Image 1 (cartoon, rainbow, N blue to C red):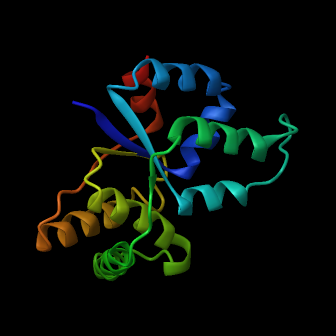
Image 2 (cartoon, rainbow, N blue to C red):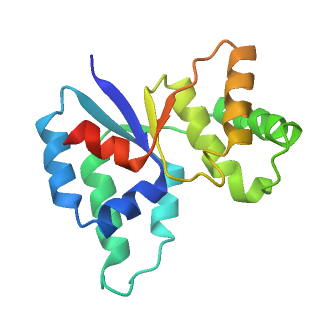
Length: 166
C-alpha cells in the first residue's frame, strides 16, 4: 500500500537546513510505489513568500521551490470549498477548546489538514507545534472529523519522516 503524505511548509525548510534535498528526492523517487508526496497551492504560496536568501543560502526560495516541485510532481490537491468549510469548523472548535492563535495565523494549517482529510491522505508531516499540531488544534481536527465521519490523518514530525525514508 502506498503511503500518501503531505509535508507542511516548515518541513521543506527543515530539509533545506539539513542539506538533505537531493537525498530525500532520490529516496522518494526510489520508493515511488511506496510513498507519494502531495502538494497544495497553499503550501506552494507560502514557499513563494519565503525570503529569496538566507544567511547561508543565496538561493533559498529557489531551493525550496525546486524541492517542492521535485517531491510533489503532478500530485497536486485542488482546493475545494468543502476544505474551507471544514477548516472554518476546525477553527471554531479550536477556539472552543481554548486555542488562542488568530484565524489569520492558523487558517492555512487548517486548510492543509482539511484537504488531507478530504483526500484521505495517511500522514501530515509537520513540526509546527504552536499552531497546526497544538493540542487544541489536534483536538479540533479529531472532534470535527468524527462528527462528519471523516478519518483524521496521522501526524508525524520531521524526525519520524526521515526515519521512514532512511
